[in-house]
Structure formats: structure tokens, C-alpha cells
View 1 (tube, rainbow, N blue to C red):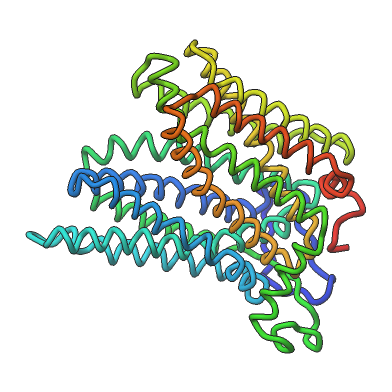
View 2 (cartoon, one colour):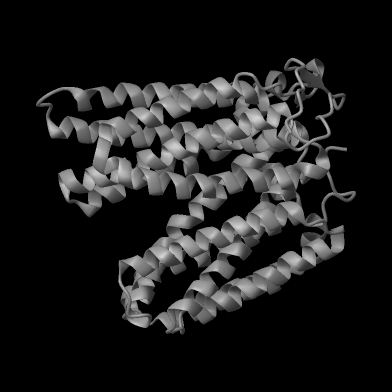
Length: 439
């Protein structure tokens, strides 16, 4: 049941703040969650329409790759800048503005698709502009949303809130991809673009009713007044770098993400070479990974562990993930491969929730946006590098899958042993103990 908390938005000074209501599904969190759920479903429809339409019209893999790059690069470049903005102005209105601009931009750029006999080159530019604008606006939206969640739910519910948020991402992906594949054939790309634009506007409307407090320093000690935006940005980067546990865990997370990416690049070859199956089983394995990730989100949000066991459970799970990934490259049974991908997805999902929650709970409230911006940038930056690594090594070794999966799995295990079991990392993961910086 949703709590009917109705107090207006306020800005807190120092650390005197209105505490979130005691329920996870309180009014403010549900307004954020339901808005994102709707826009995410629309965004999946947009992604399918964009790629399918581009493939039909151009037949160019390079153009399709360029569209993916246009949507992902802004998040890599703008993450720290967006995080700094989320600490300086109202996070609520960043969310509303980003979704509003996303919706209006898509609707505006979709208009030429309804004009008869329009030049196809113009339409390609419109799709590229959509992808780029969405990438820029999402780069600003994500740090603000992640920084806002701990202020919308009680402290002990933050992990559960992250779990629910990420679960909605997986569910919207399953629904969005399934429905949009059918709707694309029935309605076509232009209508799906319009649907995506409308979902963003609905999300903005939902977010506009959120009451979101935001901690700032007192007026006489306001960083923005004393040093300006650039210094705020530098302060956030120094904060992450200066916290040894935070820095080491972020580096470990980057290594895990980097060495996990080749698994997805090489998965179609594993399906054809090892399993002797077609594209249908490639889809089944991806669906299995998604299902496992969803279960990992739910698990991370529901179990309650004391601080020390929490860090050991997570690090043991990472070692297990390395073993599972290393084993996947040698299997020849479809059902064993499906079981392994589900388990790998479960561990990745569990790890992602703990990662986000650890950074949220350990960062100072007034620095939380900047910290989450750095985390977003690092996570997004290593992904294309890992994908490139998988492609290069795959071609260089003539798709030697047992070797490549084994190396990636062993690298994850080695990084966990070297970085993860250090005391400062285990202390960092032991939230919500006395390590929290906002007390």
C-alpha cells in the first residue's frame, strides 16, 4: 500500500532534514518509480524501432553502431558534470526537465516521418539526433535519480528501493522488447517514436508531484558561491579518489564490468559453435541472463545481512561468477548453458544493487550526485572497451571460447582476490555501519 505523504518539497540546510516516511512504497518513491517504469517501456520501444528502421533503410552495420555510440558517449563524457549539477540544483526538477525535454525532442524529431516523400537522409539525421539528445539527457537524469533515492525512502530500505528500481528496468526490458517487436510490424517506427515521446512526458508529470528534500551547505559556506561549478566538480572527483575503500571498490567494479562484457560479444558464437543452435537459443540465453539479473535484484533487496557477512557474501559471489563464466565457454549442453547464464545474471544483479547502495550510503548527502556521476561514467566507459576486447580477442584466437571465457572468468576472480578482500574495501562494503559519511 502506498503511503499518502503529501508534504511539499523542501531544501534542507546542514543536516537538519525531514526524514522519509517509514515505508518503501511511500508516495514520493512510487511517483519516481512508476514514472521511470513507463518511460523505460517506451524507451525499449524506441530502441527497437530505431535499430529496425535503420537496418531496413540503410542496411549498414556501421550506421547502426554509430547510433549506439551517439546514445552512449554522452553518459561517459558528461557523468561527473551531471553529478555536480545534481548537487547544486533541485534534483527533482532535473528529473522533470530531462524527461520533459526528452519527450518534446522525440515528438518534434518524429514529425518529419509523417511528411510524405521526405528525403530518407533527413530521417536518418532525425534518428541520430534523437539518439544523441536522449543520451545527453539521460546522462543528467541518472545521477540525479540515483542520488535522490536515499532521500525518498528510509535508510534501511535503500537497498530494497534500488532493487525495485533495477527490477523495473529488467521488467520494462522484457515487456518493451516483446511488445515493440510486434508493434513495430503493425504500427511502424514513427508511431513507436511518438509513443516513446508520450511516455517521457507522462514520467515528467509523475515526477513533478514528488516531494524531494535536498541537503545543501549553509548559505555562508556554499561551494557554488565560493569556488564555482568547476571547483564543485573537482571536489567530487577528489572525494571519490580520496576515499580508499570507495576508490578501490569502484576500480574492482570496473574490472568486473570490463571482463564481463566479452561474454556478451562472444555469446552468439558460443550458441553456434558449442551448442550447435540458431538465433532462437541466443535469445533464450539472453532471456535467461535477464531473468537471473531480476532474481539477483530481488535477492539483494530482500535479504538482511549484518555488515561483515555482507562483504564476504558479495566477494564470494564475485569469485563464483568468475568460475561460472570460465565454465560457460566449455559447455556443449544447451540446458547447462542456460543454467549458467541464469546464475551469472543473478550474481551480476546482486552485485549491481550492492554497488549502487554502497556508494549512495557512504557518500555525503551534498556530494551524492557527484559520486553517482563518477560511478555512472566509470561503469559506462569500461563497457565499450570490454566489448572491443571481446571482438579483438575473438578474431585473434579464431573464437577459442574455452580460452577466452576462461581468461575473463579468471581475471574477475583474480581482481576480486587482489582488491576485494582488502580491509578498506570490506569496511566500505560494511554499510550501514559507522562508515557512512553523512552522519
